[in-house]
Image 1 (cartoon, one colour):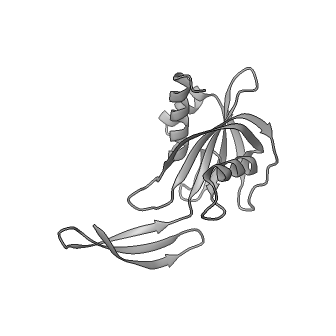
Image 2: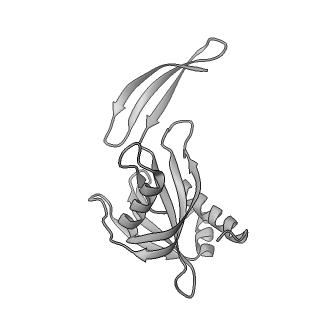
Image 3: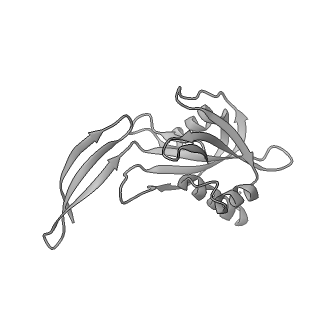
Length: 181
């Protein structure tokens, strides 16, 4: 398979849509859509300072869903070379006001690999200290705290549907059971 041409079809506020022309190994020409967005990072914040451990999420309106969604704090890189970890830490503080002292890298994902190129790095953060909330002007966020069991229940009841958030929760459960945390 070989990319022959990539033509910009639409440039929006956040994304660019391209039409790719691909030549297959047997000579056929195929056309695919490709949506480009900046890469980003998200972090599951774990507050273990009290009697019971709580996971910290953000609840914000998502126009694609036409409703509010519960997610880990996340956002796009400020520039293409920005370190994913720095991006995750910045987003955690900006959106929740917490800065984790211990950060564990989980993985990188592409949520819809057949259409989008946006890569998101996922982390877990513990040892939280207070920072300063500095949300973007278009961010209207509520902080949601819940136990791991409550978060798992919300996944299986389709109340948490964001892929990066589901991956972070399930990985945290798995790694906690293995004694990593």
